[in-house]
Length: 230
Length: 307
Image 1 (tube, rainbow over the protein chains, first blue to last red):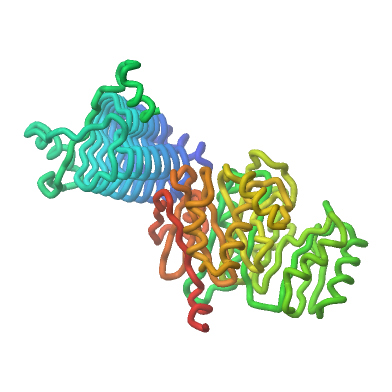
Image 2 (image 1 turned 90 degrees about the vertical axis):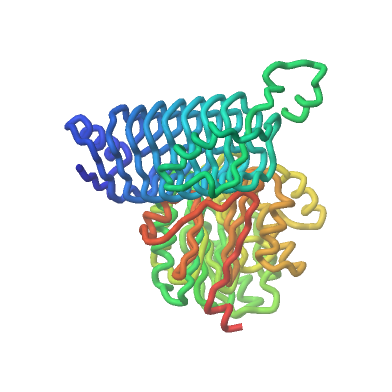
């Protein structure tokens, strides 16, 4: 394990030190005093374990392909944005746009995630142990979001494909979002998805939300739906 | 963009560190707002304190003298000195502090009362938080709570008057620092102007203090006024506000502007980004981002108990 003290360093210096450690063959890198600064651990392509001993700022673990990033605190906006593959685990809360546009990999938030969690997801898995803010799953195209707690307004608004599971209350469904039956196959999936949290899906009353697919094609006979959606 | 911060000591001690804490909070957000920096801090009650802008740059010495003379005609001056573009005056608190401000501002168009209150002191200028400290020594200020602002101007001009925090001209000791846009600003401003309210800038943030002052003058409690603003102000905004004995924030219905809050036994700290809380106050406390459409206020424990 290699330790990098981020105290007093610029973000560029910290990220350069992480890359140097990876190049030197480190398999686990610990960063102390991250001080919630932005852009930590972005663009990493190696199968390395990166541990941030404190909160991270915006875009933590963004655009990564392969590593495991653990945040021992909160994360700011755009957690793991555009991740291709890998795992990002946040012990605290995540700000707006957690797992935005990810194409693969897994993002786990042990606390709550704020608004627009999983916006425009193109694959992968987002698991939130707590609750999520409004417009979670907005325009998502593929992948899965699992929320153990409550979901705020406009859940899964205008989603194309993919699915959102909510264990608590749904304040309001978004445009063209429908509640579907949770199948036995879904339960098996949830069991595996919740394993990192050591939680059982049986503790929650999971609802599955999917696209009604009425916004896929424009039909002027259905103008009223579009007025509401736009 | 802009960065805003707020801090309130909940222990009843720690007065000596307020200035240092405020500077550390604000410096961490300096990159969000390089145009201007300012703080509104609350010290011990001492008559009535006024920070009066007397011209630009280093101010106009002759104008400062006229202002001081005007104040002496109506009030007993305990202390007066020049600091940068300001004349700072402490007078014995009279029955009509707002009348005193109006009289001073009537002397010359260049005169603006930037801060007025029994405990409030607002200092702000163009430039970074570090420069604000070099000019005014804000890190040495002792007090109980405060708010601060680092500004990235998007619409109105960059000068001292357009800097924040704003003292809300309608009510002594009320100050506001804002990040975002108030999109019904022009409509609200026209309504207030028909009621005779004077606006000092073209900065939409100024309307928040006017709004809160009006509601509180009509009897709203501080937190109720903050809550009401969520309904009456449009746009994407977060702001922090403070009174002689309280600190609060409001976050718009879409939550489009970030704001992180730490509420501990020792202090309440609020900042646009968590980095400010961690750099200024360390890691031994939880910090959470309130959801959209939230407002909350805290009162000073010592003052609350004394009443």
